[in-house]
Image (cartoon, rainbow, N blue to C red; front, side, top):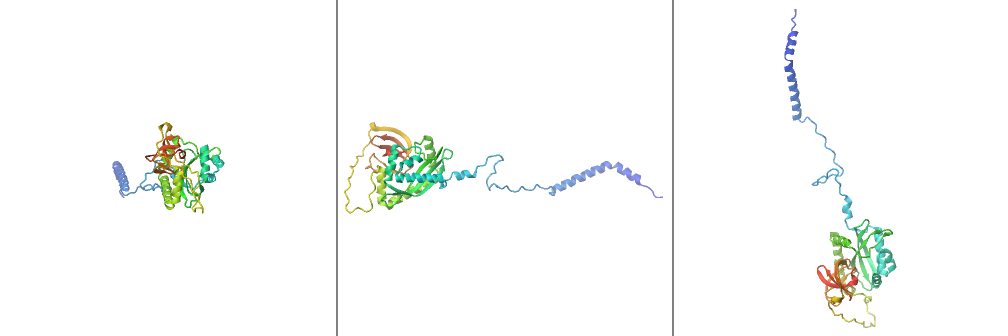
Length: 330
């Protein structure tokens, strides 16, 4: 008869069940540790790169932080011939000066004095055309306003070589459309333009025009003489033609003006920052016969110290004290 040992096995399992449970738990813990050591835990999949990836060496801005608009850099650039309305306005402006058309000029500017009207009529007798006109714009201090730098070659009547020149105009937007501000410039606007003149692109533009202006004078003696004449006094006569007539009449020479310091009684203190409205000689005395100490190009800043009854003003230009005719100051 076969012996049944099952009760004995049951007793062993019963007596050692606690130890068996402990061993099972230990085996599970060991298995988990081995899994971690062998890299069994899956790493999260890397996120796909964002469309606007941060360039190397740059820190990614925090979430929610406003991003600088890419257009801001473009807006700060000196733009060339990008505004059709400004180009049309400049075309009318140049044509008005060439033709002495005061009525058209009044329709595109905000203010025009009688002196300015007379100046436009006088300039039309000297200027034949404005060629190669290019408009460079910078955003102005007000909404939808522009500071416009006009570069052109000024062809004078009976002078072969054109004179490169540059003007700076302020063009805001009014109820009836864009116009040219021709009146007084307040202090805030002066500060804005002075800051703008330090812009590298603007300085390079002025330097280029100055260089070409000097080269043009060096290449044509008649141009140089005529520019010096109109920049130091009011030009009432047209330049002489290149070819003299068969029987030229001897021109009447104006008596030389004695250089002298204007009397204190006829002086009016100004002490204001302004600009020259035409390229002009800065002279050592209040006389067209005195030595030239500098040349102020159209649109450049100048400080008017005093004005005198004889039509001259004492000025400070780039640290030099001199004299210019008052009508050439804005």
